[in-house]
Image (cartoon, rainbow, N blue to C red):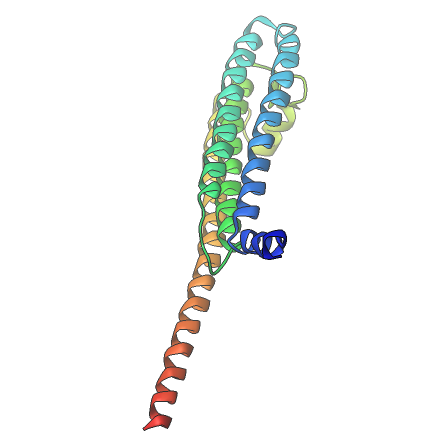
Length: 209
């Protein structure tokens, strides 16, 4: 009869965390593929706008396209690497928290990649072109100058690149702190459980004497 009862094996599979690691890792890989396809479509569509720019602005658009590709690569590869990390997670005591810790780090890394790529790429577009950001969906340079307090394209480009780098570091710091705080709480819970077990065994030993 036991050969036909499968729920114990199913619950053991879930309790060990393999269900969650498999689902989350698979979802990240699917998301990486979809993101690649979406980025490819956007990249191809942006070429139409780039070639409609002025002669000098085309150079900014071309360089922005390069940084766009680099940014997409960094994000997609980050998804793939973190999916592999989650796939091998094995924590019998806590099943979901280790996955969440990795996801928090991944979010910081993804935001950092986006901030850096768009900051540098947007700075290049502002330096050579009439728009900031994605060609055709950017911000007029006059508004950019007002925001940055400078009428110099070079200074505006430098500020955008530096701002993107600073934003990348801030994103990494915030999400890594959140991830490590979560791990620290898990360690506190584990140590508290261990100390409670030691105290209970000590009390039992004393009562038996």
